Amino acid sequence: MRQIRSAVNRFIGRAGPGNDHPVIAVTCVLLAAALIAEYMARATADASSTVSVQQHLVLVLAILVGLIGGMFRPRWFLWAALVAGEILLVETLMITPLVISIVCTGFLAYLNTWSGAIATGLLLMLLFAPAAPSSSGRLMVATLQRITLYCFPLLTGLLLHMMRQRDHDSYLLRRQQEREDMARNLHDTISNDLAYLILRIDHAETNGMPNSEHEYRQQLRELRDAADRAMTHTHAVIDSLETRPARQPQPEPSEAQDRTPTPIPDNHSVTVQQGELQSLIDDKEARLESLGFAGDSLLGELRRPLPPDRMRLITGLLAELYANIAKHADPAEWYAVSISVDMNDDVHISVSDTIAEHDGKLGLGSGLDRYRTIIETAGGSFAIRTEQRHWQLDVCIPSRP
Image (cartoon, rainbow, N blue to C red; front, side):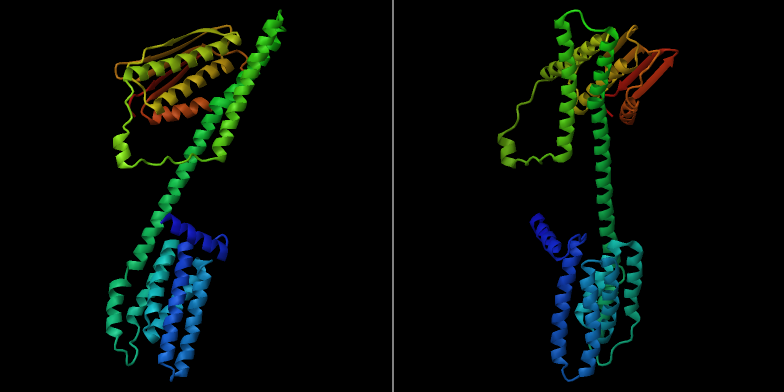
């Protein structure tokens, strides 16, 4: 099915670039070919009636113009095909104009709800058209009309319209989620790395040059590492914007049965996650220490392995909290960070520090707001209390949303 659609899109792209409805265009081509074939057969059979053939030729040409124009501008040209097809159907009782009228009504309903309703009203007027003289098939056609012409094209078009709107809304939702994730990723990585770089430079400028060359080179290496991390994160963001992750092929049932992955023990997963969190905390503490901060960080023992999305949320929140301490807290005062897990496997994070008297206001101040939205949406709690210069944060991340 995908190969057929690709071939149709290539054909329509050559015929008219920018066509948004390849299925409508291909259907118009098929209907035009069927109309020409049926009209030529009928004209050959009624060659004795030259006047009638010429009158019908005008309607046929009008239908063809509507179908050809409908390949590129279906919202406008399909009306010509619909009206001319209904008139030709009343005069000749040909089968193709009936099909064209039904299909055009469905397409108009697919493109616009009100257009479909008006087209259906025009189609229903055929039920009250006078019967053509010497037409033995009038009864059969009227029966088919009563069965198919009432609501079928309208309902079909509306159903397709709703499906298209649903896909469009889903696409917009995915794009919005991608933009939010990208903004949070930019803030948590590049923004915090650059803020740390600025703070290190300010700290070095305030304290003056170090006494030994070894300390001076150590400071330069630390500054370069911070800049290198910011550049690495920038490249990662650029790569994620330029490329899409390839879809992993699904294994066949036989492969799924023969290659069952070996489950990882829970205690091993807990050890790995405990180590990742401790490594993150040690790295952030080292950053704060290089800026002149002093404090405590307490990490409780994990009882069970955390789901990957919950683990990413916790690590991202911790990185944001330590970055906020560096940007907004007073280095001369003590800070404290506590991470614990209760009996229900809910993760509790508490942070306490003292707001600097001269806050540099590095950043937009939107990082914690994003995490508040995520955690509260998942059913957790996010509380910030400020008393004079004392700042306190208490977060509870539920084990299950």
